[in-house]
Figure 1 (cartoon, rainbow, N blue to C red):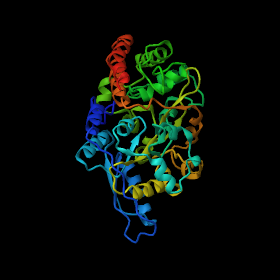
Figure 2 (figure 1 turned 90 degrees about the vertical axis):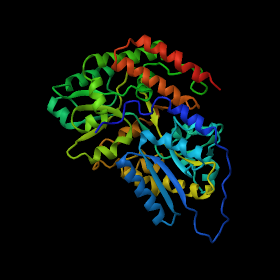
Figure 3 (figure 1 turned 30 degrees about the horizontal axis):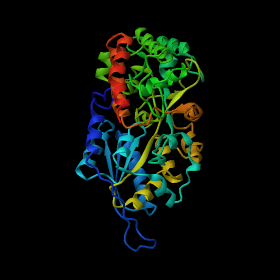
Figure 4 (figure 1 turned 180 degrees about the vertical axis):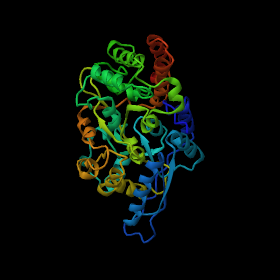
Length: 426
């Protein structure tokens, strides 16, 4: 089975999302009165999830309903199709009451009035944001309000195969390892049909190394007007990745066309790859796979990039109170314990993140503390309506440098030419 491509959002999808949202007109929900004898409203919740993730969300919905919550129709969509389905649903007037979305992708929905700010709705449910990690709350705050409620605070980590490390006689990764140690490890693990490391050509994979080396992605994180990947700090980090690829320690273009890095890792063809916590449910299901996680290598100072999804309430929902009730449960103690046990999330609720539900070494990865250790170094990419399109441009151009051998400076010039006008668009 062919895996999803490295750049997981198809070219032009962001344009589809933006154009589809032009048809949206905001309307308020119909809150029920206290003590209303009518049965709870039935809501629809859409999430982007691979099969193993979908099972976790089904468990969450079942627990909510067993705890006395209202009826929930859960719609699970393949991650690569999630935004397209959302856009189509909003355009057709059949938007879900609640949808789960990454912070890098929600701003266009807010801009077009598709989101009812979650902050006030959840305050009515008694939710206290002070109990949650600040970083994802900040990423999901836009136009002066908390728009969506984050369920997780993942970061980019290195997944590594214990068996392949042992077979190659390579020392396991250590906290704070240098880029040079990372490259040496990848090369030592590259033997026969096994490659050392897989790195997708996306800005979410490159950002920590750019920041670690003192570089930046854009000129102003809060109000970007141009990309800065061509400047020395960022360019140096990107060149370091190009040089790593040149050693032969990463999968070829043909190998990636046949299998994505996560599938190569699961089938023993890849000793390490970079991703967020989202991979854990599928990796746990792979029989015989002995894996763990390690922190990112450091080019200068420690850095990592936020990976966080949040529940949003559609402004068109007629059942916003019921939607907020479900979200409060999903991100509360019980809900986050369920998703933590399922392996899907690094809980955004501090009390669950530091509990055995998440940290227990009896369930792989044994070193889940790595995700929490990265929190002080977490940064997020810009939150702006054009960012999904900018990501598409950067990802497709970096692919040319990483997989097609196009000179890096040519690629960086193309990024400036294509991405900068998108950032300046208002």
